[in-house]
Image (cartoon, rainbow, N blue to C red; front, side, top):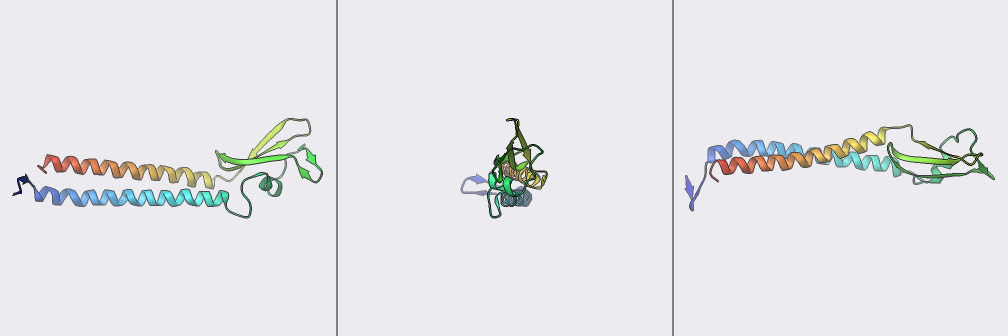
Length: 142
């Protein structure tokens, strides 16, 4: 059948579009779940009454044996860590050396990197299904 000089194959389009819609829906779900996972890991790491700084190291972490003290507080710096996702504390030791301790909990790491993988998978699936649908449409004369 032709419409305004353009050949169409409605039977082939009818079969191709539902498959494209399914893959696109899966891609959107992957992208959304991955985004929520990355957001959850961010909240887990950055949430609470303080940010991953030296304050968190002063309050939560047990100091390693031999950590230097300045009055009542340990000599420590802290900051965000990307592996594992969370925070890391660097203690100044009494002998002048430094020791870095990170989080023992890998939950935020699994959420963050699993979420990023899902987001990238969703984007790749959306692009792949779109390209496949366009090729199929061109092959069928559209």
